Length: 503
Image (cartoon, rainbow, N blue to C red; front, side, top):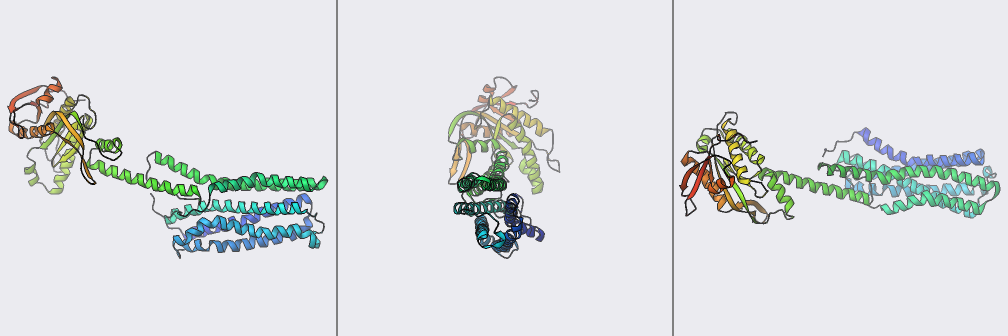
């Protein structure tokens, strides 16, 4: 997520002016309607008497009201108030602005319709029947209310994006209703113009009917086109923003945070979307952190196999591999701690690669060694042979290089055993760990220790040797007593150089 970038005074002034222009646009629409009427009716002598009051109300008074309505938001943008104090006005601004424009349109429309009755300059204007006058007044008020509402709703999307970008805040209060907006939009776009035509048909005839229908049709065409443009932007743009964000999140971008740009259910949904993405981002962070301490494949299995984030206990035939560094204590005495850790991490990364390459899973790191498994918890075909191949590749990789800036050489001992293994999540409370249990695990650990007594690098149990079915040349070292077992165990050594390098 990008940090908020403070807005410059010029940017703040521009977003303020944009609201005033949007409110003043109602005057431009009114002017267009007036010019259509004057042109089609041929009443240019009446022009000053209809255009000047319109400028006073729909431009002058409208802009003054806009300044007053915008004041709480302006104080926040200037840094003189908190966002919480401005948020309610932001979410109510479309409704308040629409009410202001509609309220100004009422006296203007009444003035124009009654002018022929009391204004000498308008004496030549044809008088309208009561039905036409009432319907025209109602429809114009509804139109201007709807126009202003959706124009300012479109502005709100820009304002909210501005506040999000420069202040890092999103809307959290929602008063609008998407269904109501759709209903009003359909009412203005279809029923309003149709109602005017029907009233004209019932109120006039002859040339007057043609004139009235021409004026109303031209005005309706212009009004519906303008209103539809802003209605579409207001209703659809927040959905498009949300859709693009969902596509990005589906592609794995969890850094996303979307500005809430509408005051209805879509805005509320956008806020919930941000909350969801934040949860996904936290889950991904936990997964990545988890993956640093648990093998990635184990972490993935735990997160996806069981809904509670644990693996139920199960018993399976598997092969266990233990590694350790010969003489590590002596090496540690002669290296600075930071150099030692650097060399050890480089060494463990080298050991880790062959294990993963052959289908093994590193269950845990134990000091200077590690404990890996094949066929538990992830399936691994011919797991015994895979473990021995990994051991051979480890010895070849480790024996041919040094580690760290000081070039430390590490000699690795490996013990491998195959048999029945119990695996699952163990722990208490919120602290869980995936672990493997059983005699096979203990035997692999003992075989790793026995390497130092036999001068070997890889020791395997009889069960592992049998499972490999002669794939690797081995040397029988007889039966030895193993700590933790009452009976002697047959052990075998594997020469890392006895086979061609594994693929």
